Image (cartoon, rainbow, N blue to C red; front, side, top):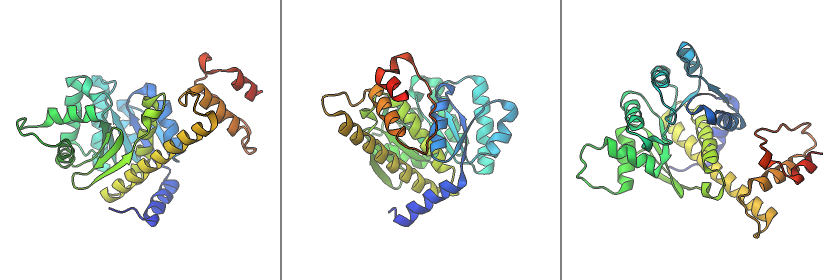
Length: 287
């Protein structure tokens, strides 16, 4: 598959016009960061797993995100109901495998969802994806190349698979794509990955078929990599080689200083302003 200038422009324009609504059922401690990522990409995140409102919210959403980090019987029941509605209404579903390898309960829940519902996109690290593959494999004696196993997994579950390592490996089982991953250059890899999940959820929310989904996933992942690369180069230029490029305090100071130069911005609101992150230079910039 080749991404033309026209196809990229078309996907981005469709996302701009759609304002996708994303139904988020996952770890609520990450909900604000996720919602911010969705908002930046012109969408809106709806965090809800109350049984009484699941039907209405999922039916009105453009995509559904299912995460497995904080499971209990009530949340699984809500996920099941949301997945049924998503399948009926053809709402694209992203299954986030974060920490699925922690317990058998989580692996079985993920496999149950894959076996019974339509999951359009599965995302996880090498360890998380391999844990699920090992649990699902029937013939454990037959050894295969790991990429073959990834492709088999995608075909068996009729899904697109993203494996996160030093590069993003993306496959539908028939084609495969590699895009660089710069997460390791940032202090909080978990936060960056949460942002990536929000980007993906927004991108699949504009899609009407599998062809559009794979194009949107590729464009979003490529855009995410470009943003990572640009950030790293910007920090290198600003802070020089003798300063820790991952120092979040320096990043906050620099971003605030640059944002304050934009005359059209009338006010800036701080979020998560923990004491250890408030430096003298940050205070001076605010003044």
